[in-house]
Length: 194
Image (cartoon, rainbow, N blue to C red; front, side, top):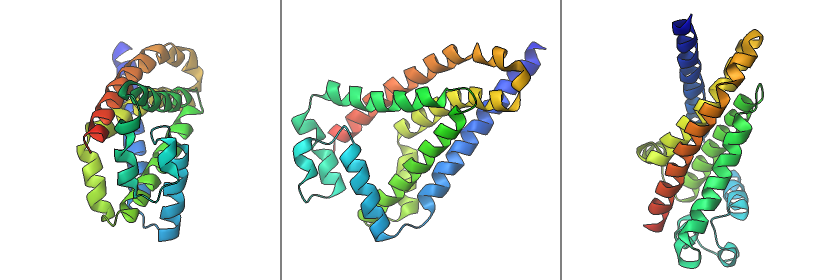
């Protein structure tokens, strides 16, 4: 019985990971028009806690805007803002029955954001996706969202054992939060080095 439960959890995690990975991949690789890319970039920049207020109105490229982060903010504050956003997504992804949908939408939006960034910087989308795949924060965030959303996925599939699944949620949230903390620090180091 114990082995069956473990296998079910592993299968749910793998399914969640693969689904979220594919949602990101296909939304990032799908072509994007210049106007859609510009609109996406502007909405991300306007709502991004990392970009200093005074840089929003300047006519700078996305890379120039992001690279100014360290110059006007304390890195601890930057880490907390990145971490806060990621923890919010993780928290919503851990909601029983609803979390997998939130994680899927987040991955879709992240993929479209990546496609928009690649388009605005005239980088071929497949090349940019490969660069993202080389960055550890991408994998840490994907693992974190997959961990919590797999519990939500199990609750959708196996409704009669939902109490058993909900007991696993605190452990999944703890593991995911640790991954997101490491990812936020790493992401800050990468952006500060631009």
